[in-house]
Image (tube, rainbow, N blue to C red; front, side, top):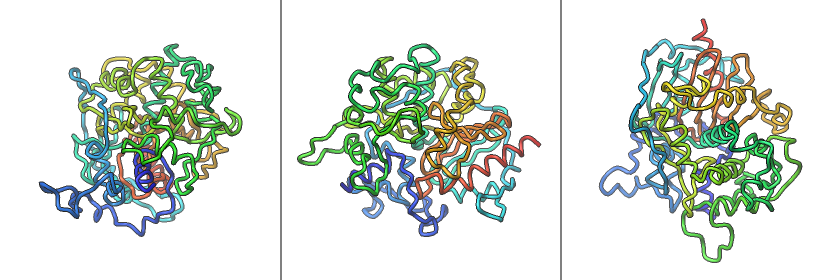
Amino acid sequence: MKNNLLFLLIVLTINITNMSAQETLNAEDSNPIKMGWMKGFPPNKDSVLSVADGSFFEFPAMRYSVNHMRQFMPTTRVEAATNNQYVFYTQIDNSIDSVLFTPWGSKETMTWKESLSKNYTDGIIILHQGKIVYEKYDGGLTPDGIHAVMSVSKTFTGTLGAMLVAEGVLDHKKQAQEYVPELKDSAFGNATIRQILDMTTALQYSEDYADPNSEVWKFSSAGNPLPKPAGYEGPTNYFEYLQTVKSEGTHGEAFGYKTVNTDAMGWIISRVTNKSIPQLLSEKIWKPLGTHFDGYYQVDGAGIAFAGGGFSANLKDAAMFGEMIRNEGYFNNQQILPASVVEEIKKGGNLKAFEKAGYTSLKNWSYKDMWWITHNEHGAFAARGVHGQTIYIDPKAEMVIVRFASHPIAGNAANDPYSLTAYHAVAKYFMK
């Protein structure tokens, strides 16, 4: 059971809020280079991190592993472009470091620069009007490095799904069972494509890892690529698990952020295209963007990519994706996504359904096609992942921020007070 729990810390987006940042090392002292993880040939015994005992994803060790997931887990490639690779124009604005903002719940201001270490930022890029105006690396991440994006993975899957809807390959009003008959007897069977994309499905599924009876344990056991324990008789991969999810409530009434929705969408996408999520992402988005570095997905024992949280990517390549979305699907001299896809995302999802989820700090937000929509005065929207990953797009300020991080607390509630307010302050700085 212990191995399953530690595996979950990688592959699931669980809002862990019972850890105090004050009880952990700060960003400087937990820097993985300073800690000396996995150094030497062979590494010193005290510096070795392992999947088998779970040490690779315990803080502060996870600050190393987010940059080296391929050393620990089986993966499959998302091939980058081999020609027509895009190069950003760079015009660094060092004044951004001095931008002031007031974190939620505080009366004291903070500078943008101070917020980076506060949030254990490993790498961050700010684009303004398509140019790189800010770029920093820390925590062991380098410009050519690959970092786990956690639940930002969901946004890539959701965007592919929305693209297929716009192209007429998927009908958002049809039910999942019409595309994947194997889901007929599961909770997903009579859920529509729209309900799955917007996570308004009614599922008997909890991601409370502290509860030993939580459904998340079964999902974890199914997807864990390590050998199953003696006597195990449950699902052996993600797709087998999805067929066991039961209904609870009525589809369409309430938003519920549950990773299994994304993996169900991944199955549907793969069935209608006859391509895996890594293959399709490469062909439809990653290569057309002109990316420089292969990304990769963690896979289960059957080689199925973890669509809900298993992607790792290069920071600058992820910024290309964000800029493409900001430009209504146009990038690298081509229309990569139909403009209608981005327009629909920006409109947002069902506000009343989102409100029922109880996100007290995200009032008046919504969720659409696996994007988080702020509905603020700038119309900002974002991809979000645990431990501080984000692709934040502010259309009015013509700004894109991409951050990779390794905050000791998984849930974004721990870093949002110092992040969302900072992003908005920088956006207003550009609009002066």
